[in-house]
Length: 361
Image (cartoon, rainbow, N blue to C red; front, top):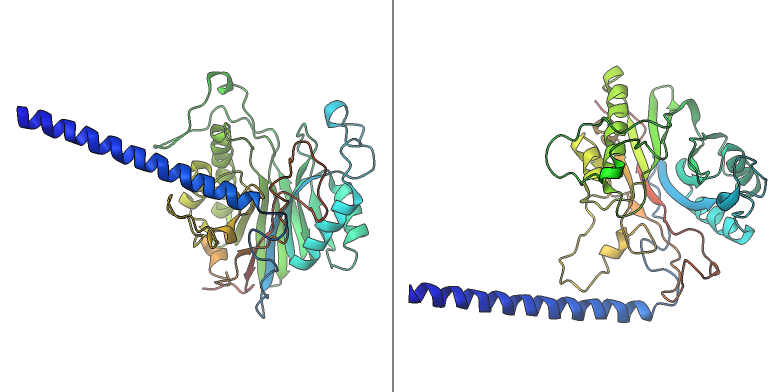
């Protein structure tokens, strides 16, 4: 008995020491991160400084959240806190957004946080007049902030669909790993921003179904994103039930990390994460150089994705997926209070992939 007690005490001492060491190491590394960040004065920090070269015989696909784009034409449906005229995007920032889109040079680009089809049309005509985006899709989904998901395409859009206001009360959360749903959120929960689904004819022999989506934001809303992901995957299942060979790409702002349940629901449904090779560094790895290549948000998070079902993934150009992030604001910038710094376009960065538009057997 005496030996067991001593052994137990020794275990407690060792465990306490290890916890202290971990705490010290974490504090030291956190301070190192702060020190490194404090020296950053704005510029290229994440992703690629320029897009990778597009391989021959491919088409380029991208997603880009352009952060609260509102034009200078009054929408009478928006008033009060979310009056669109009060939120009009400055022309210098629109120039930067357009510069990124032009440099990305995607054949199909999914956009998030766009005011309306009319606003996007005006933006295209004014800032992207020679980019070949003849086809455009954006649908009002009744979101209180007045923004929606959109598509710009050089190829013909043959079908557009949104599903607004879907009730999420009855979704079945089967299996483990779900976030707790607060008591006051167990009735009346709806999909906040419906994705936009478009069908695109690339050629007489190749078509794509593309979803541009924007999941519910906030770290406290995991339960909401999970419910949204369930119904969006059910929507996808309907499409695949009609045509199992359909090429489907789901891309946008998922507001979720690679390990979050809402993102994993797509992977469990057979989708491939085109940037699944990204580095998730060990907790004590202070060298973030490679990990930074995959950050999609100026806060240093990975929350934007291009996912492909098995049919589309067969045409994926391996090695083409990347994040293009030419500018990150200085660490001293307070996004809640300070004006946008020169060179700022959006708090998100484009995620870019290429594919060969020829169905593989």
